[in-house]
Length: 229
Image (cartoon, rainbow, N blue to C red; front, side, top):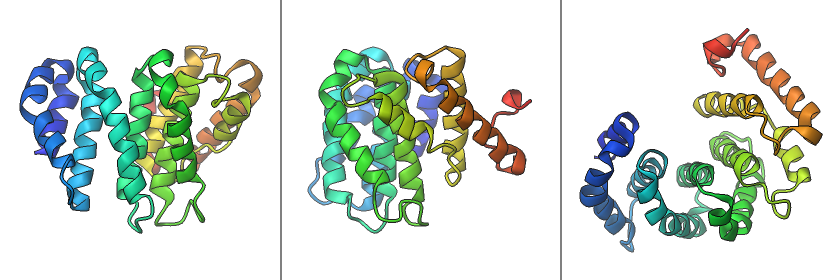
């Protein structure tokens, strides 16, 4: 059900908002409220909620984002020490999706807790081990979205911007690497002042590292073909 719903949302976006809101959102919300869920059930629900936040109408997003953020933080607290990091990977990614769509005023109450959670994900012992690397890179992807869209000068400071930009490129989760690289280039083209200005040289160096990683192994497809020169 989740896979089919996700495909519909990706294809039809806000046009299927009412269907998802009336028929499937309550089902997945009820599933998440159960006291006992398998990890697979948790991940299915996380992915459904992430797709709702990313693809459905802004009005519906504004109805649900507070509940979703709160639930994701709660799930993290109960799964953060799991040996399998798939739940942490999924919710880390989802928190970045939400950050990309909220206004600064909407997101402000959540920045300290969300930033702290994502920092904890990338700061585990051996963050790039085989067990941790996908969770780490998805959390870094979301931290970069905080930089691009939610820089507040208090939690997301210039020092934080420098830290995350210098951690690029992603090298393990290749699908996410492609998305991260594309988004960075888009933000440069839009002259996003959260990353330019005092961070111009750091961004240029990151783009050079991304290009080098791609050219060393183009088969990994970490850059869109139309962006490769």
